[in-house]
Image (spheres, rainbow, N blue to C red):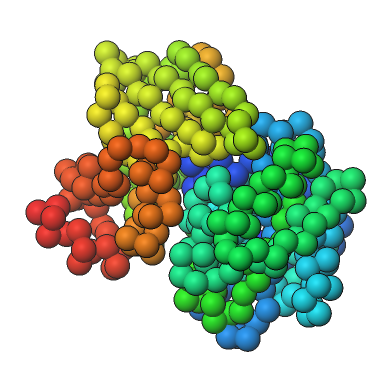
Length: 385
């Protein structure tokens, strides 16, 4: 498919929902990509299962605390410079770019790069949502090196990182990003088409566009935006979205620590949730949701906070006291739930003292009635009864 200005508007909304509150402000990335597409033309979105095995792909992204990204709006050229520097270092031109995550600015940033360079974008990513650290990629989990990588800033500074592993890549890139003022521009995880087919989370970009379309055009269908999101996610490689809570934000605690936006939000229940309180803790992205102390969703499954009236996503840096919101959960693809994956981004990695339980099993009655994607049907149907 071709991605133009209209598709970008939907992508910004849908990717912010898949991003679990993280990945940076979606509208900053959207405006950059829109400007690039208006100047240079639409971008081709490639089916990851139909690209050549020897295609040379350089993912592009921003790194840093979302609160800092909001204060330092990029021009759009910074990430292109990172990719060009990595091409020069490797002695080979990219055939395509792609996101490293689904979320906020980092789902739209590759379209800014693609429009400015004439490259296509592959319909896949390495997180299926947003995560705070560079080794939190299915690419890493299934054997791809993130290095060599290039980290740049808006002043023209750049660093080429050669690291012994992806944990060291995260540590070095995070330190450089902090020195660059808390936000930087990345080119990393260079891959072939075959490696994307084997390790990527497929169709995450097009799903984000469908979710955004569903919200933007819900009125035409006679259904609420939330009902439409539940419909378009059902039976995908993710799974049907579930309403988790509805209420008013009564407390928000947020600070920038070691390059991350860390904190929690307290939501007092309204309507059928009156009398209960939801607490969500986050590190750039929403990690764990508890109602009256009981876990109702946890990383790596997606927890997103939406405006109650329009169902538009609210990222963690934009949460404010008094907002009336609804909270939804979206199951993640099975490639993100393997034992190898949960070692990298399960609850225990973030310091919680419990193991991951899928949304499908935390909310059995709801998912007993839902259509499950084929890869989940066999795994969960018997447990759901």
